[in-house]
Length: 106
Image 1: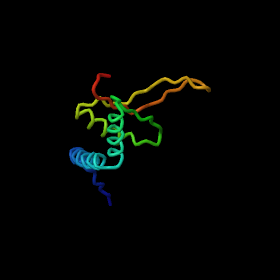
Image 2: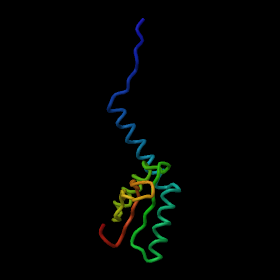
Image 3: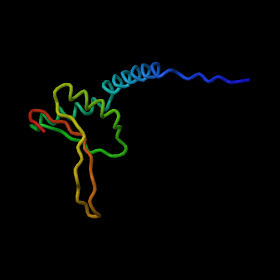
Image 4: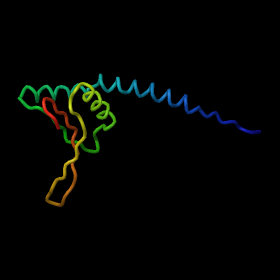
């Protein structure tokens, strides 16, 4: 007896993926990470700065940060990931930052 395996169609999987990603975006934009970033941006502006950045490491949620980056960019902010070369005591390495700027170009 042959066992027939049900494989979902690519179209179905694409629709499912898009729907779930929209839900994920909504969760991120209503979540604590986004609220914390907005608070940090506001605090930086109140101190007279025209930007804010956060040093990233392997524990940060890059997928969520990409959603936030897109939302901020859509709202007119410069928002991106930037990599900086660092000369350390034990050698050179790269450090990545999540950067948000307003009021001036990159």
